[in-house]
Length: 595
Image 1 (cartoon, rainbow, N blue to C red):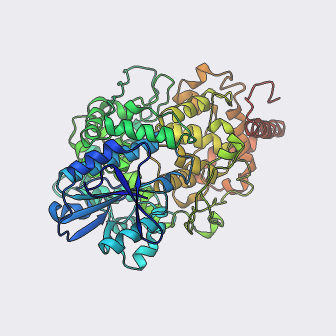
Image 2 (cartoon, rainbow, N blue to C red):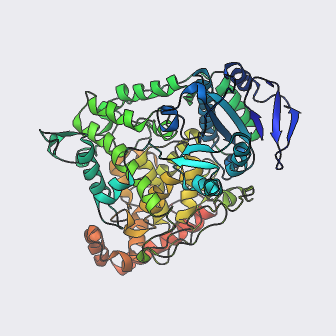
Image 3 (tube, rainbow, N blue to C red):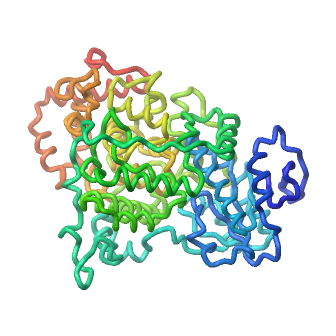
């Protein structure tokens, strides 16, 4: 573990061994010399500090938590660049670089503000690192981590009172808001959203702020236009990599070369000013058209009018409360304003509460099925893709989540196909899937409809393991954390937890993809003739009709299924079996191969 906390040794690393002894070791090739030198120059002397605060890597703001109240000159912070955590899963290189570049810049910002910084680079779990710090500094305080995995890692320190947790006030709502909005499970986002709108007064009007602006809670039905290139999508901003970003990227390319994904240095906002400028760009360039085209997908633009702020907002480089406030007062159409605010004040807060209430989807109602817990982090199909297992480091007892809720009988038998890792070398032949996967590994990003209606939809239709898909999302996306991906994939995208937080499976055949995108135009399959999704949709409903027949939101498709000829159902099942076989083997689909 490399620790730099003062300007005394700018060219050396202090290595804390398991016994707590300190050894001095020259840094080979000085891989972090630029950052360490800058920090050493800016770091104030550790005077008589009254308070030490551990700042987790996704809490990078001095406008939330203890740093709001504490006097900078009498405060010290501990930051940990965890190479242990980075090794748990095959995280996208872009994700690693984004987090560490922002954390290093935050360290410099705090040092320049007068806060003393202890910046640690560790290859052991957080609990081991912070136990050493608590011995040297006394008990630390921290905001409650958003991640369940992090809370579990830190639990021994909390129990021994070496670490004291305070409320994470980066969130816009409380547990009380969640429980008062409804009785559950099951939980419903619209009830929660209705409650918090009234409680907060956001987008409310009237003398008592008891009426919705525009007369209704949601404008979702107005936000379903297809986009064919007009109006023109804005160009993404680029950020000139500074010495910190360059150094982090060099380290990731060198020390994490076995991790997947393309690392694009010019798309990393790392300084506070850059993060704020990204939000200003989004507010000016995206928000007017965001609402109407929110559900659109296109090969012409991966972003269309989505804002790209999720990753830095989840790091708290920009705060959700500021984003909502700015959107509310912006001069943009109400459908865009409400649709955007609903994503943050509604859905983002809701999934976080569901994740806590289910203990990370480990505890579900009996009708959702049993949930065994995995003992090691999932690799999301990495081994099938590469032919070798992901080398997981020592977990020290930290489990890695609910294996997979089994709501639909007979599901969860298919592994995640290699196409999800490389749509160039192992393409599926379905243009929608191949294009979205390519985007993910090039940018660590795709917008929420491609995540739901392409990636999760296709995986669900193929009965792919929801846990494997969840772990893939966790590794692939720059904005992914357990509280994000588990509700969105286990709970919504794959319907693996049943009606715990959604009312029906979000599945669709080729007609939906053709309606909401231009993917079908560049595909070898015709959506209304031979597209595999057309058959996979009906095959899914037939396989799981015992569970789905009584779902009122599926009344029409289940009624149509009942009228479908036996010969057609047999053909559907044959296509399902053949698609799974081919994709798991890494072979592309063709009309001839599906016969």
